[in-house]
Image (cartoon, rainbow, N blue to C red; front, top):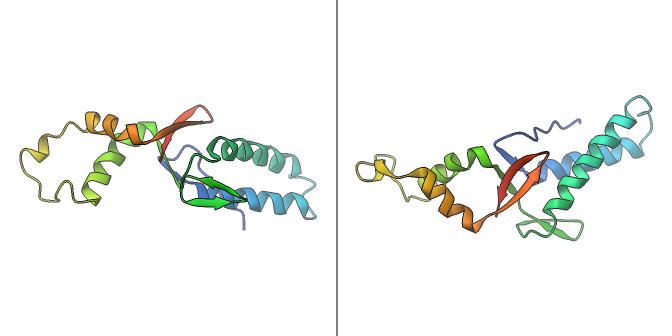
Length: 129
């Protein structure tokens, strides 16, 4: 299968991390990984650390008896995420006019972050709820 993860993406789905983790476990336990086992084991170890940091933060994804947040939002993308969320829930209309076009999205994103927790993944801050 060989799932590729981008751990620098604007949005990361925990289910993709879990799927890759399980894939690596199977590859390591299986036969024929002599040339790549060290690489797989390193990646598995890194994913294990990420999963552990997200363990029991709440969320909607249960895996191996623990609960995980599904969505991780990169800090540098959070303002865009806040704006898209506001549009998706109908707080801002597609054909918005003044004063809705004057929203301070940086401030709105900071306010939204009060409902989120931050987590560090390879030196990058992500927000999750």
